[in-house]
Image 1 (cartoon, rainbow over the protein chains, first blue to last red):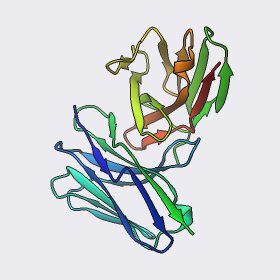
Image 2 (cartoon, chains in turn yellow, orange):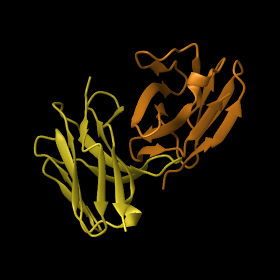
Image 3 (tube, rainbow over the protein chains, first blue to last red):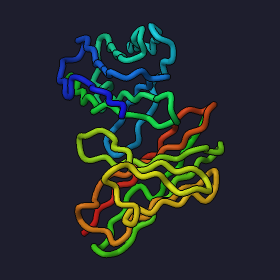
Image 4 (tube, each protein chain N blue to C red):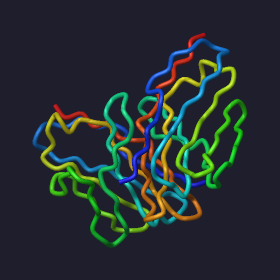
Length: 111
Length: 114
């Protein structure tokens, strides 16, 4: 069974601060995805990283896939209240196409 | 882009009744569909994986006779919660998968059993 540990579980920061969310596993994933979920809605895909060491940027969000494809990070620069939400990482294994989800990080950005 | 429609978005039912939730891929044929359950302030827990025309594969601890999954076509999967009880109240989310589209999630169904 592939497990993804996501940290921190909860983060409350002031507008303008930077933050990093981590996803770690002892397993290798063929790809890793980051989602953002609003209350009462389904997760919305932010990015997919596939190559070890890959870095992708989405405006103020920077995503990195570890060289060994076992871990990933999401860095948000100058957080805004609109960034508030539940951030989920999910890894796709080599066997089958099932996603393994991390435990989620609930981010609250205060104005 | 790939769109998955989930219906209903919310439902309230009486204890002992059954509820059916539909998940449709609108603009692509999904190789596989997944059903998740999410408790408040928690991550998604995979309940089962279904492939069109075959029986669903349930995760450990998920009762297949209680959570009936039918994947009749490449664009439709249904989850029926049978003989619902208050402890079945939760947020249920489906996801459809196809190689070129990755994973697309539905908007979820909030089930409340009273």
